[in-house]
Image 1 (cartoon, rainbow, N blue to C red):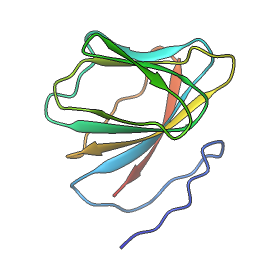
Image 2 (cartoon, rainbow, N blue to C red):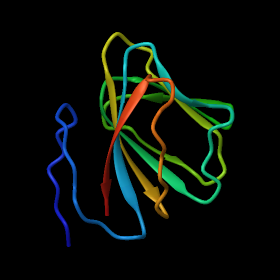
Image 3 (tube, one colour):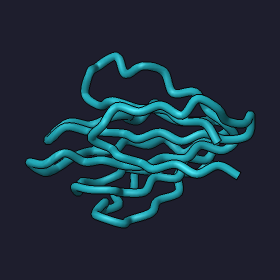
Image 4 (spheres, helix red, strand yellow):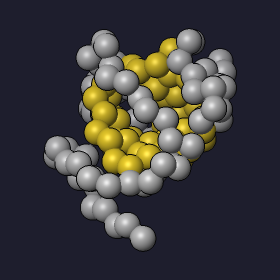
Length: 117
């Protein structure tokens, strides 16, 4: 059993984990996005839980509103994008199963902090 206190606005790390899944905090700045039509995880499901802010997710060409406490499942193979459509930061807690390493964002439009479960 492992227990964590998540503080999205602070830098933090979890030093241990397992090989089966991991989580990330994703911070999307106002009027920015992460992902797009080519963004998909072929073998991994991604759960997205909105901690704060609001925006929208485009999953397989369908638009889903994102707001505080919304939980979204992006299934393996579905293309997806997370958009912050507001003037405030959008923060999500994401779980990937099986474990998926998400590389450093090349656009600088979102940031990730990783912990492993």
